[in-house]
Length: 458
Image (cartoon, rainbow, N blue to C red):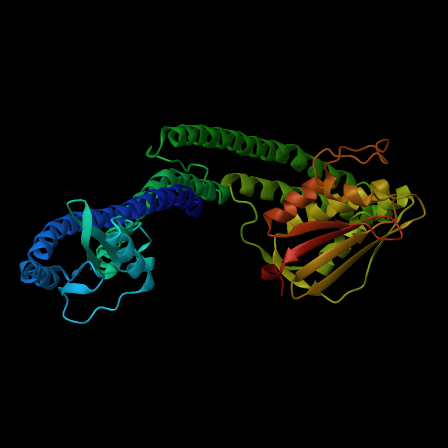
């Protein structure tokens, strides 16, 4: 985001500098050339007066000294042409060779016509400036004055001006860059604080707030709204934790009473009820573990804390056996593949609860006389439990909605349920660092994958 802000501020600045700098550079170049031309016009007028006196008196020395001195000082050559068109006075130190254009201008000057004034040009296209002026005496042209100024002087002056302008543009851009950086940091500093506070809340620190209010007023308003939102989240989470604490605490007493009654009833039953009694005891103990886990999670405000080594295959077999009576009543065969032990460091109770939710969903939507397969596999990515049913399944575009709370497919609206099973399983797996994925096999039904992270597998 800072890069975009810098581009937004810097590009217009550079554009303005280029436009204004380019206009100024061109104006400065033309101004320097115009100044040189004006100076040449004044000088040629001066030498025309001196040349008129020298030509009338026939004394070239009247103008020769001034022409030579002028050449020494400015490097500009002055040439006086007599009536015949021959050089009469030459202020330079070498013989001048006139080109065709200059010769034509001299012929026009001897005919009484003034030469053309040089036009401004780009610095790299500058050539020597030549001005030819007739010497008029009593209405007749008695000679001509030719002034030749080197283009190097004007070019050096223009390039010097452009170099200063370029240096100023670099300095202005640097200052603008520093200002833009500081402005971007000033604008983005509150946003970075918001990011850090959101990351802290994501990690479970719901007390994270943004204390100081810096930056533009709009961002200050956003910070105040964020702090109010964080306070509301903390309040809601506190109420949820209090509810979980109260619910887990209040459920322990009736559960304990229920287990006592089971033990009391067990004393009056014969041996054929021993298996049912033991399964009831085990389910009671599992409900106790669930309440303990709920209580610990509510107290610590951390989901998916430390885990213990768990044989995932043994967990699967236990849950399949626990669901055997329910599946038998539904006319569905629940089968666990025989696998060697696969260990994972995870929370056993949460894993069992997630698996129960998935099996319950599979049993609920499986037609009678079908089969549900539960298998466990291990890969470098982690341990995976797959629950495969032969139910009606869903359309491919509906797969992404299966883990949403209260979502029901149009095919199964008539089946009793709340649409929470897979959503709860997804949340439970997420709390222990796992994830849930649903596939739609080609031969129908659903395949629900419960993946435990590789960090928790061995």
